[in-house]
Length: 284
Ligand code: NAD
Ligand code: ZN
Image: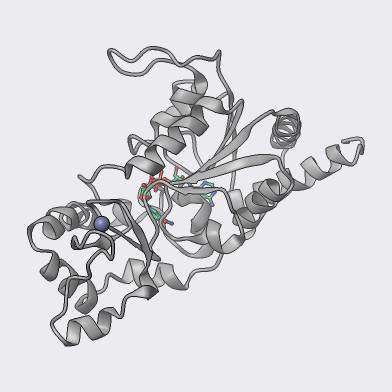
């Protein structure tokens, strides 16, 4: 590692240790080292196959038009990207974030990822902004269900689709938030509150171009965004970015600094440095 990266890691570790309320924000980049491609990175699914991006816009209108047909298609023509994702395991980056939470340093982790890898790694105070592959959600009353609670194969064979909410009876969909679908109000509200409250935000592996998620660092930074929105109450959190490449947050100076590199390598080093500071060791 070069000396510049080392210095920034030490700075980040100190700021995390001194933080009153630190939160993490993560995107697809934290999971590429678990074998799940991101969308817009150099090896991203959409960078390589722009048609896949167009298809991704069709799921939500399909569900709204015909939930039975949506489920029939989901079960009979599963998308390889999702089936591979279910088999993936957390990498050292996910484990480092879970450990930082266990140490009381991170108060919550807000992720755009739908792969449930933070959950598998042991993060507890987790907000899955775009939902989870392992859950289903009622679009009417927002109740969530474990995907395993429904025998979907049996429903398919016996013409019992779509699965229905046990609370209100509406047809339910995957918990994944599709394009054109609003962020579930509970998770949107909680995430916004975390962004307002934090004094340090650690942003890992996101290109920060998908809104409204990408507005969370702006809220944390205390800047106004959009017409008619008044500036948030505070002077601004320290925004630490760990990413393979600069992002709009870097370019627009919303992030205080960028530590450039792989989250699977840098987050365990950050954790190690935090441990040293906590133990009162001198950093070299
Ligand atoms: P993105 O694909 O737009 O951007 C990922 C960013 O991470 C890029 O800037 C890339 O350079 C960087 N990156 C890739 N590997 C990295 C690594 N090992 N270390 C550090 N940085 C790395 O991802 P996004 O911003 O999360 O937006 C994509 C949207 O698609 C999200 O809303 C998410 O819901 C969804 N998505 C989820 C998954 C998943 O669940 N794992 C995967 C792909 C897409
Ligand atoms: Zn319901």
